[in-house]
Image (cartoon, rainbow, N blue to C red; front, top):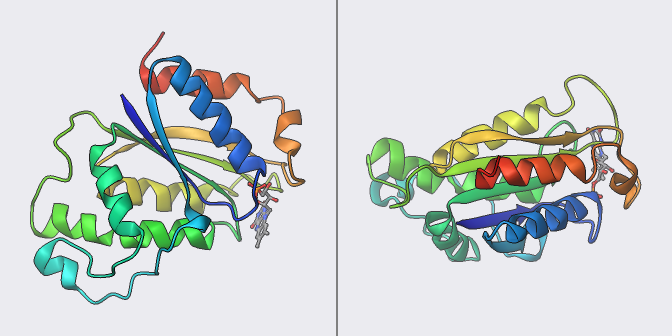
Length: 190
Ligand SMILES: Cc1cc2nc3c(=O)[nH]c(=O)nc-3n(C[C@H](O)[C@H](O)[C@H](O)COP(=O)(O)O)c2cc1C
């Protein structure tokens, strides 16, 4: 099983990256192969709405997204990890999701298959400083529809409210047990 983990926090070694690292280790412990990228380190131009993908199913912007398209197609599992920035995903994660419009066009306009792999699934893990009931809603909606375009239907995730300072996630009661549970759900180990 190949898992693609994309982290979207610009803060290095922060809460999101600790979550992603722990999850990656858990997945590998269950024999999954993990490929992980920091979206803020990549050159991902925002979508320019040119509409080219509606005709060809490919994006004409030549940047690191071209490499990620290949990884998206090859993955069994796509896991997005982003902190909440103003009730949504970080700008770097959102730019990535918007560029998946090329896959949306391929799937829904050109009616082409995105991947040869079956039963692909997508997940989101996130942290937020506040504990508002709706703090993760925007990010979940965006991830759900982005993952649908990638043809990796959203299958859940983990959400940690009340986590702000760098590394504070380690003190959260749901860390790391919930991550171990999610890894088992992903690799389908009871
Ligand atoms: C620009 C910016 C916007 C933020 N917006 C929110 C927000 O809307 N709601 C919230 O609860 N936390 C918000 N936060 C706090 C982060 O989600 C929180 O600090 C998180 O733990 C950062 O994760 P990281 O260490 O992975 O970067 C914001 C932080 C920044 C820098």
